[in-house]
Each structure stands twice: as C-alpha cells, then as structure tokens.
Length: 195
Length: 382
Image 1: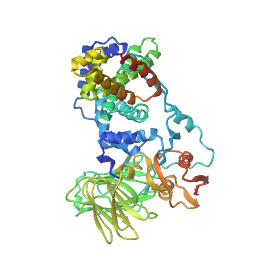
Image 2: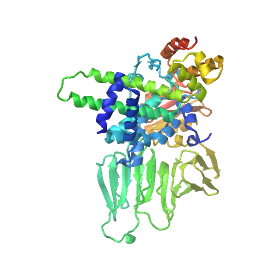
Image 3: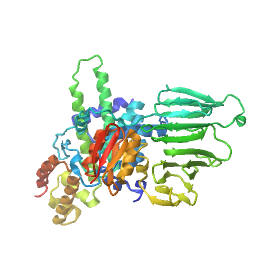
Image 4: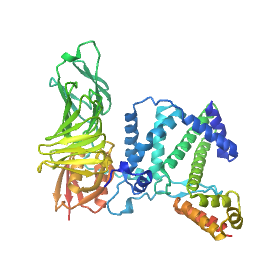
C-alpha cells in the first residue's frame, strides 16, 4: 500500500469518491493554501477567507458523487471563484439594503443563479478536457451550430467520424454529471445532434 | 475600486446580459485581484489545521470495508441545467440528513468523546490543570515562559531579561493527558507536539547541550524544528527515534505489541535494543516489544495522524486495536464475548461523534454487536 502522498490528483479523486478521508486530506493539503490566499486577497477578512476555504472543500466532499469531477484543481478553482462571487453579491446587497427596504429573497435567488452558473462553467471545463478533435467537433456543432455534414467538410473527416466524436463528447459530459435528473434533459438534447 | 467593477459585471452575468468581452473582463479583474502577493497574517500551520479540523467535524461518514451503501447520501437530488440553454437548478441540502440523525441521542449515562484535557507538571513538582487555565502566561521557569495560547495548546518561549542563559539549570516538565484527553505543546525550540489520549511527554524547559531529547509514553505527532547542531530524539518505550527536522507520529502505548513510528516528511532513524532502522517518508516502522526487531512497511501516513486531525481512520484494522483507540478517547473499558481475533474493520469517523452513533455505524458493518453498560462496551463476536 503506497502512501497517498505519492498519488496523482486523479488517483486521489477516485479514492475520495469512495469516501476515503485520507485521500481527501491529501488533496486538502495540496490546495488549501492556494484557495486561502485567493479568498484572502478578495475579502481581506480572515474569518471570511477561512469560511470560503471551508465551503470550497465541503463542496468537493459533498459533490464527489453527485457528479463526477473530472479535474480536482479545475473544480476547486472554479468553485472558489463562484463562492467569492457570492460573497461579492452578499456584500453588495448589504450595502444597498442599508437604509432601504428591499426584499431579502432576491439575495437567495442570486445565490441559486450563481450556483447554476458555476455548474455551467464547470461543464465548460469538462469540454476543455476533451481530446482536440472531439472538442472541436463538439464546439462546431454546439457553438457554431454547424450540421454534421458541414463539420465533416470543415475538418476533412467523414460524417461517421463526426458522429463518433459527438457521441463520445456527450458520453463524457453525461458521465461527468450522473445525477438522474440530468440524464432526462441530456437525452432530449442528444437527439438534436443526430440529423 | 475593483469591488465596484466586479459587482457591476456580476450584475450583468447573473442577469444574462453580459457580453463575451465583459465576461473576459470579469475574469481578468477576478484573477488579478486574487493573485496579489499579500501575506496572510496568521501562522500557516495553525490555519491549515484549524480549517481541516472544522472540515472533519462537518464530514461525518463511515466507509465500511464491505461495499455497504446504506450510509450513502440519499438526500441529495440534483437537477442540473446544462449549457445547452435550459435554465433550472434545484438542489436539496444533503446535510439535512445529518441534522435529523443528531436528534436521536439516547438517554443513557453520557459517554462523551474526549477533549483538550491535560496536566502540566513543572520542574519544581507543581501541577497545572491546563484545560482549566485561562489563556495567557501560566508560569515562568528560569527565563522560559509558558503560555496558554488557546484551548488545547501551550507554548514555551524564552523571555529575554538580560540574564545569562548558560547558567540556567535544566528543569524537566511533563505534560500528561488522561484517557479522553489530548493537548498540543510547542516546545522551547519551536517543535510542535500533539499529544493523544492517555499519554505523557517529558522534556526539558530549555534545550541545550548536544541534543534535544524528549521522553514519550502513549502517542504523539511531532513537527520538529530543524536544527542540524542539535538532533532531536524521542525516547519511547525502549525505542529511540532520532530526527533532524521532520514530521512524524509515534505510537507507544503499553497495551500495544509494538512501538509504531510513521514518517510524513523528513528523515528519521530508529534504534531499539537489538535493531536499527532508517525511515523514509510514507513508511512506518514497527518495533516489536517482544521480538526486539523493527519491521518496515508502506502506509497511508494520513491514517496514522488522523487522530490529530479529528477523526479515527481504520484501514484493514484489527477490531481489538480499533477498540483500543476508541477506549482511550472515550475513556471506557472494552469486554469481548466470542472471538474478536479475525475481525477486520475499515472506515473513518469523526472523533467528536457520539459513542452510541459510532458503535451503531460499526455494528452496521456486521463485524460484531455492541452494547454499552455504564462505562463498558461489550463486544459480541460470532
């Protein structure tokens, strides 16, 4: 049995997904300081900064099985960014509310929206990690709205090749988001790519 | 002020009216603000440990060695929106399950998990109950002052009052934890020691001479301050552990068959009556008390120091050894009915857990049945 310290982030992640606390501690040791400094630079408040680090790593632990995290560093960087965005919003609202009679429920809506945006950005990150050709095909299809035949011509590959890349990309994205509700939504979308 | 800029852009981002250029601007401002070189004002290690302890407290799971999924997070249902354009995001809070369970505390005589309890015995024989003391200066010996920094920690430092330090006689202090106790002490050279339950550490109030030597009974985790001129030696139940500057854990309880030293960082050499051994990080040395030999093995070092980080970590662990750890921390006795010898346990659980909940988790793995009678745990194995 090798020491966890020698394992790669990816290997540790696999262990974390099986509730391995020792692996989680090693990841924490590798990234805690970077997270803290970012939080500190933004908030300049020790208590807030530590709260933020706590929230980021709790998120890693809580969400380890809800969707499959592809890259630990990416997840943590993205997460801390959105936690900090939430902090800015909270602060902003507090300042505006001072003296005014505004609705507090607007704040929680902001938080939910930011949570959703986090997921969106995180998924973008998943796409970034796709192999080059696969990523290109996916982007042409989704972002540029090109048809499979058009992509085939653009990239000088067969249409079947384009379909294979798309299938693969969707598979990766689907695997990285294993929550049941999502599969329903994705399967509707998948049909769009087969024309 | 970058705050204004970020808020303005965030507004658009949330509303969905942000342009690509503005989004990039948001990213740039965020990254630039986040990457300044400002120094964090508190001690690095303290912060790291503090945050970790808080995390471990909140994370309360057990990983049974069989693929037993009934402790899974069944309260998490997430419907996610994806960047295809659907915009709905709802999630239920998975921590609500933990809150519901906490309400089912049993009304038997309370066995509580341990805490920061210890006694400090000074060179002149005087004892100070550390958990009862308030923060601040506790005592002065020669030109060394002992301060209680916070709950669970004391530290030594030299007070410069002009007196010639060479003439100071060396006095020994001992810090002792009972079953159910733990404490942390920063020694006069800056070395940090975390003492586990039912342990004691004897050390001089001031280091000098040719080496730094401390005596340990029980278990402690050390982060030794580097000093090439003064090697640091831990003497533990007939085993000497010599280090330079390093992080390691020593387990030397009288009711365990060997003295186990686990090295996290640095280098360590061990000697017992009949053997010598050099340790590399990631290794654990088991110095048998009966055979006199020293055996090396590779381990997950985090398991050896899990106690210091606030949890029990059992990895292919013999039930009896696991119960020893629990007994020391909760200050209880253990009695066995049936044969516990081939029972192996795996999993991790917070040290602040209620004893009944902990035993319930263990029982769920099917390893044995547990009953609590007063301050005794009766373990029934098939």
